[in-house]
View (cartoon, rainbow, N blue to C red):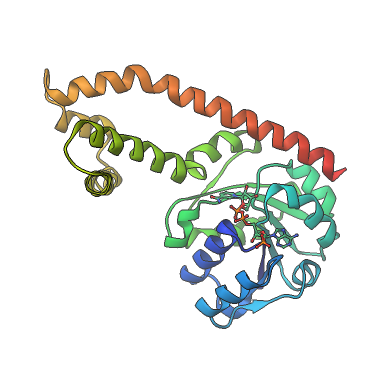
Length: 270
Ligand SMILES: NC(=O)c1ccc[n+]([C@@H]2O[C@H](COP(=O)([O-])OP(=O)(O)OC[C@H]3O[C@@H](n4cnc5c(N)ncnc54)[C@H](OP(=O)(O)O)[C@@H]3O)[C@@H](O)[C@H]2O)c1
């Protein structure tokens, strides 16, 4: 099987690296194209054997799986260039902006949406997937197996994709900012600098994540740290009272932005 990645920016390169590092694909099975060729050449230096296509059409004509990893504004033009895709090809849209039915009708073939995480490059994080009605059982299985070597695959209904995207794909940036704010509160109230505070927070974050990953629940870990009437309990009271409103506000704003991108892209595809 040959897979191709169109658009080798943050996401395309993390995806390509994740698939190669996870050993689902051999370098010679991967074909790349990017608007400016330097990114492809830099990637090929890191992964010898990976091939470059001359343009999007050529890539689409030689691959069974075609990952479209350009920014949303470029998606309608890329879809026009690669359509109609050849029989048996599977287009994977790494962008939630268009409905699957619109993508399948534009490419006249099978299409799925994939919302990966940049953490795929290190073999972790969640790949959200939803499949169009033209995707065969074998195509679903091939894609999910391919992604599973570099991430946890979660198949979601298309209607749930936007909220799930906030948790998993926007998640690395949102979680990093939350931890940054936590660390800066330490700087404002302690005698250390930003680097010292960040080193302490980062190590605590990794230790907490690994503990939770072993099956310890949030309630368990809170119970172990926060003794009744103690200091942590006071901090938890503030967080549980004030954070839900902040999180709801963030979700409403980001989902409104997703809806406006969807409307804009749908207009540009027709
Ligand atoms: N970043 C994330 O964490 C993340 C997560 C999930 C989904 N996504 C989605 O992934 C997509 C890409 O995001 P990104 O952060 O990777 O953006 P990015 O870093 O700007 O990468 C986009 C790449 O596409 C290339 N490109 C643009 N037009 C092209 C065309 N017509 N043909 C071929 N290549 C073209 C660009 O080339 P140049 O070098 O010439 O600019 C650039 O390298 C977006 O749709 C985004 O919503 C991103």
